[in-house]
Length: 208
Image 1: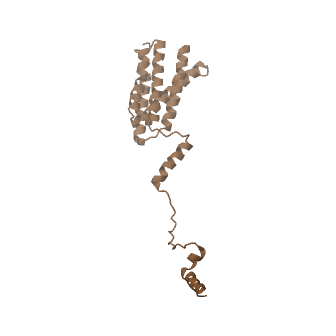
Image 2: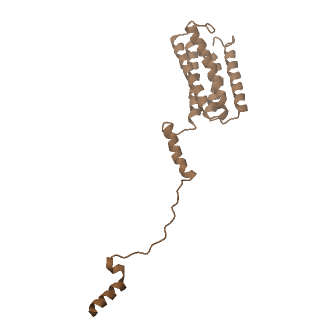
Image 3: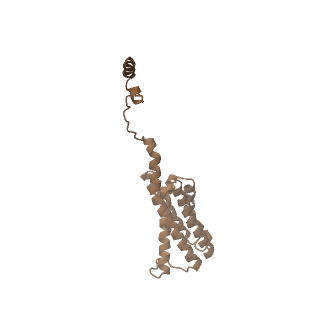
């Protein structure tokens, strides 16, 4: 009897830890939940990746447009010089490409004014002249007349394609120059090119 009472007292003193065989740990205060919002710096790489994926996965290269302007000018210059060699008038065509050479050098060096506006009148003038030649060859209009060999005809197509590529490149490029500088560069380059073409058709150079 006394043994049963003693066992009962021990069980009450031990509490629920001995009765259930498990130990209840003290509870800790819960930390408040925080909404994690990425900062602007963290969002920039993701935005750049998304923009590249939309644009075709290719990062933008700021040097692409000036180089394209340069190589299109080279295409016009080389083709015109070849026309001069084929037609026996190299000096006349050297005079005609002089403004384009100046603009090409400036474009290669990365001058803002050259790719912004100075190259554009070069392309427009030569594209206009090539269209007049094509109209004559197609017997649509005789604004320009003459005798054109097969090689010269092919070269006119090359000049026209280079001019179109240059116009597209200039229009798509980022323009950092002011409007005043662009207009001034356009007018100066246009005057030089028109003047060079006019000079090349003078008597002293027309057959040279």
